Length: 139
Image (cartoon, rainbow, N blue to C red; front, top):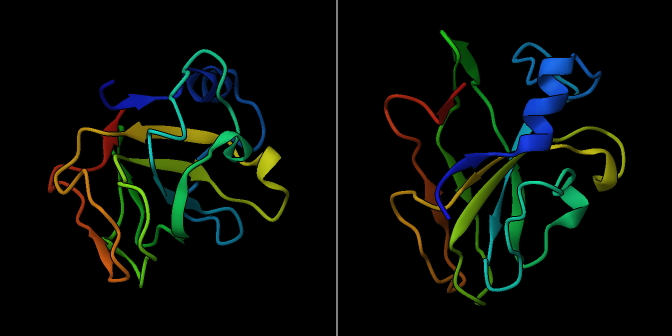
């Protein structure tokens, strides 16, 4: 698999469905990222839509801050997953739109498995995510 924007996300974004935008000025509904073991979760682009589908998630999901959108490119500040317990190897990052509802209402945005620093095996230490200088993804 290569990095991908979830098809259901693109479909709903283009249709203007409420709750799918990554409004960088919205302080309630923020983009977030999860560390994922692809031995437990398999990307299925045609059907995967909400955070609740993810399995094999390590550590605590992190909210993305200092987000920007410039000429269709989404970017954010670098993040740290603190003290991620030892466990299965992490092969992917999944970005989703976090909201105050259940994970079954939080749309998946991007699956990133071609990323510098992956795979990584958690050992109780921090896992640092440094986004590419040109941004996280471009539509």
